[in-house]
Length: 124
Image (cartoon, rainbow, N blue to C red; front, side, top):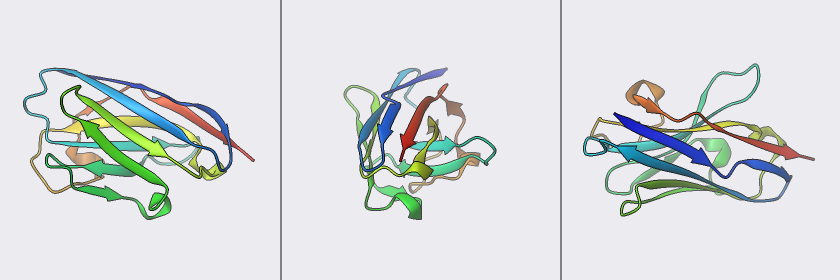
């Protein structure tokens, strides 16, 4: 089993920055892809950023140039640096891991392990 714990969420004004972290523990040997998803109230879950086993990344269009996904393999930690935050970025953010050895993806169907989420609120 793989356990994921997100942290770093909070409240920030538009234009501000936050860095989310996701600590991964347990049986991580079959973890290849990792990603961040978000879900705002009344909206569907959305893939935000993904990273594959060798560090290639993918982003949804709305966050390109503002968000950066990265990972520290030694510490089994995934990060999401979020800059120039907008009110529409407000959501619950979840990290997830995939046992599929694929190019980076933010298709939730490939992710079998999920964290409990951390909330991000951006005010105008």
